[in-house]
Length: 451
Image 1 (cartoon, helix red, strand yellow):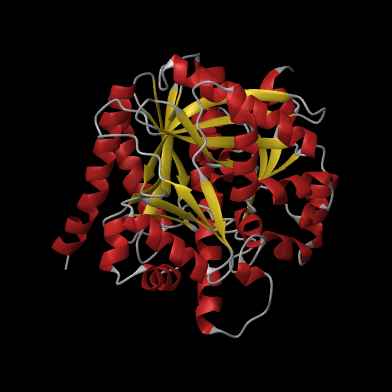
Image 2 (cartoon, one colour):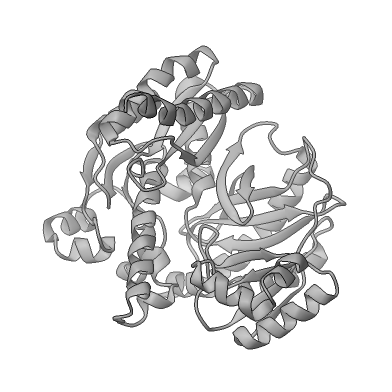
C-alpha cells in the first residue's frame, strides 16, 4: 500500500497504546529524580492524570484498531459507538491499566499483556517513542528535535530555500536571572516575547509575555516566579526568548495557527498526510479542522514543502513514524515555524478519522476535533454517555457525525470532554460546535434546578 497509511501501519489493523504520560515524563524535570517536595509530587501526579485523559485519543491512532491499551478506565460503550460509526472490526480493549503511573511501569507488572503486545501479529503504535521501546537512533532523534532550540536551528537552516517561510528570532538564556534581564529589556522596547522552556507539551512550558504583563507583575523576575508557581514554566534551567509573530488584527477568515503532518516510513521516505488549521487559546492547543478547502492552497503548499524538508532531515537523523511542524502566520501571511513534534498529536487523530470516514462513506469529509470542551457539571461516564447520546441525533440533523474521543475527564474539578465532528462543510461543523457548547453549558443550570 502506497502513501502515509502504508508507511504508518502497512495497511494492517494495529494495536494502539496510550503512553502520553510516558512520553511527556521523559522531558519533565520531575521525572529525573526522586523528591519529597509535596508541590513537585502534586505537579507530577496532576500531569500524569491529565495525560491519561488525553491518551483517550489513542482510539484514533490508525484507521482500524485491533486493540486499545488505555491508562484510564474507559467504558466499552464508547468503543462500540466509534466502531459503529467508523466500521471497525472487533476491538480488544484493555483500559484502566495505569491509573496512577506510567504505562511502561504498568506493563512491567502485567507480563501477559506485555507479551501480547510484543508477540502479536499487528503493528504496535505508541503516542511517542520512549526508552521502553529501546534506545537507538529513533529515540535519539526524538530527544534531539523535540527540543524547541534544536527545532529552531533546523528551521533556520532550511528557511532560506523556502519563500513564504520566516523563522522567528530566538535567543537562549541559561537561567531565570538572565531570562529576566532580557525580558525586561525587551519589554522596555515595547516588545512582546514568547518565553519557552526547551521542552513542553500541551501549552505547558510556553508563555506569551506582553510588556504590560511585565510591568503589572512588578518586574520580570516576579513574573517568572509567578509562572513557575502557576506551573506554566518549569523551575530553574534554560529558557528561550522568541520573537512574537504578530498576525495583525483578528478577523474572520484570517489564518493563524497551522499544522503540517507527515509519516516517515521504515525505509526513511517521507509521506505527507495533510495541512490543518488549529484552534489555539493563548498557547494552549484546543483542536484542529482538517479536510478539503480548510487551508487555502497557497498556504497549504508552502507548509507542505517546508514540512517535507524538515521530515527529510528528521529521517536522516533516525526518526521513523509520525511527526508534525506547527506554524503561525504573520501580517504578510508568511508562515513562521514554531516547533516540531516527533510523535502523534491531536491533529494526527483528526487526519486519521478523516481518512477512515472517506474510506467507508466516500470522499469529501471535514473533521474538527475539540479536545477539551468544558462541561457545565461533573458527569460520570454513564451520565456523559447519556448526555452525548441525546445530542447525537441533533448533530445528525445538521449533517454532522459526532465521535467521542476523550471521555474520562468528565468528573474532574473542571470537567471536560473531547469530541470529533465530521461533516462535508464548515458551516455544519460550526453549527454543531455551537449546539454542543450550549448543551454542555446548560448542564450546570439543569443540576442547579435539581437542588
